[in-house]
Length: 217
Image (cartoon, rainbow, N blue to C red; front, side, top):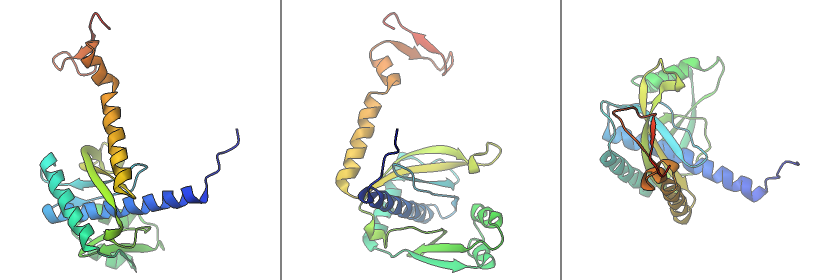
């Protein structure tokens, strides 16, 4: 089969979504650092449906925390801070992130001669290679969705961090459509349907990985 050709409009939309989500990840880290000044922040890339950022904090994030973090993010968006990229030397980068061990490790792992850039919006500074929207005000619609554990650099020998997931889109309509799709997928989840239809159950006393089939199943 011939490869599907991607139109210029599709490429432009893909690039816009990347920039929105990448920028939203920066704003997420900014908000967490405001509410949790002791936090150590690691990495926060865009994804196909949103973005995430990994943090080390003194306690687990709660749903109430996510609400508060998202509120700070919306404040940053309303302030319309420009994203400013700047090339820095390795020594300057090490100094800027002196209290951030994960940033220090990233800097140390960069090959000699690698161009190091920072990105700043408002008072928040991060390591970054670029591709953002022009300013925080150009993030039209976002929502924080969940928290999960994630080992630093995906290695179980490393520290377990907390990963905050979010989603961001070019319009509130696209955001609502995505959230509705997630809700519908959750309703159709086979594990939930199996329980609702009395097909099976799972008991923590027996083992979370063992399905107990009912007569209907």
